[in-house]
Image (cartoon, rainbow, N blue to C red; front, top):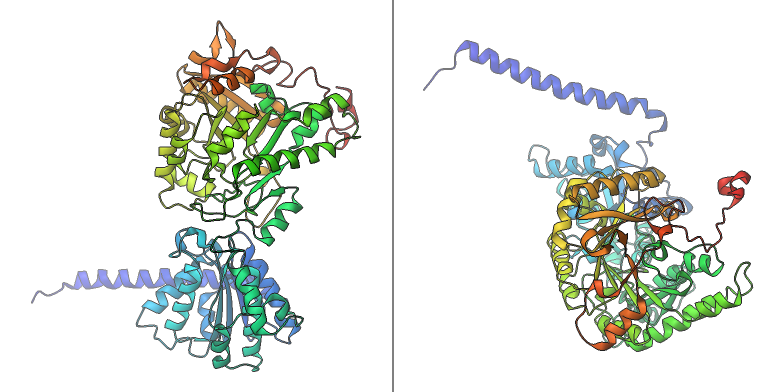
Length: 624
């Protein structure tokens, strides 16, 4: 047996002492930080409600629970786990978790340290399975089934397992809410009532187990509802998301109410239409949108619609704050495409009629607006998911209504099967796998492969194709080289580059005005990307008001030194009606000089009257 030299023993002892001192110093620093916060720290003698929250949903529910418990004489401290020392759990007697599940089934960032402490402790035999034997606990999980059952409320389930592994006693079975299935409110109220019953001693654990097999209606919770037996069928229909005859309604009552508050007109069970602000603007002669400047559409004759309110992404910059449903495949009741088109036009006309009498709207423009010539299938959701999308497009073209369709690059097989549309967009929200995951928050596990394959599918199209880039400062506005490499994958005719639109704060997005680029930033990015293409693309147009710039393929759209990004819509419809193959060059038209990049007008149509609001620009600006 080899002997260890005295010098080596001394070295080992020194290393051990150093490691111990390092551990102690880190612990002391953390304890010192906690002492500095002691004046606002929660009372260690009271129970705790922890909120593990990324977007704010769980924090809101935890605050609601705190108020409810207080009204029942149960006063618990509301705690952000980021400000809590996990070792203090050893002294707790009651803890409640309201916990969201974040990326890949893990914890939100504010609960990361606490989660690691619990996971490590439950797996370490030295800690012991009775470390939290004096602690009672309860967990409510907030997740989304759309991301798959494996990840649905995975963190909440892990919390329960770790707490039980350390000897804590679960007082009520964990609750699970689905933010995209419309069941969070029902489940949370139900779970909260059970928790109060147990904590006040009105119910036993056996009562709770029995109640799990029943169903409680929302009105029953408020004490106004019918008997539990009669309310069971009511809640079942709610939980099944409006299922009728084995088919689900995409738009639940909760989703419908939320979207209607935002101005959407819901059509049937899965479609919608809304009046765009640029439609209103051009009706009043105050300018059209960037599609008017870039492609010559008449904004006052454009209908913004979608045949599918559902989407396969939950983008951080979503205009609709994720009030629409999500899904990876069509699993809902399906409406007839002809009925959708008829209802969309009818609802659009009704909204146009409401503009009668508004200052600036004359009878000629109003009459034109009642007969839409363009349809932007980009309102919300993923239009290409609708199984009858080709029939719907045929119906639009039969009425000589152009089609601008936007897809989020998660359904390549749908792109390949798509009939010719006037202009086909693919949203290129990021140029790398990691940034795309962070920005789009896709449901598909193979989202990057689907994204790349969608670009390849775009390459095969003969009609006009567009990459749509939405720049978000601090997220995706610095990846010019990566974006440049993607140009060769899809070989788009055009590249729209737009600054993200700030839509206000919400629980689903952490974006602020700091993430919104200036038009100068968008111009600089566009010029740099064009330069990277080695002359294949040039900056063709801009619309300063929309903070939007257009790159176009030089060999196609620059004819004898003049840009031809506009569309001959009558020619397009004639080509579609002929049934013969055609390409994007067959229906292009010259771009007016006022829309060309660098023009004094900045993409504003000189036939329109420029109007600036005094509250935004000051009285002096009204003179321009």
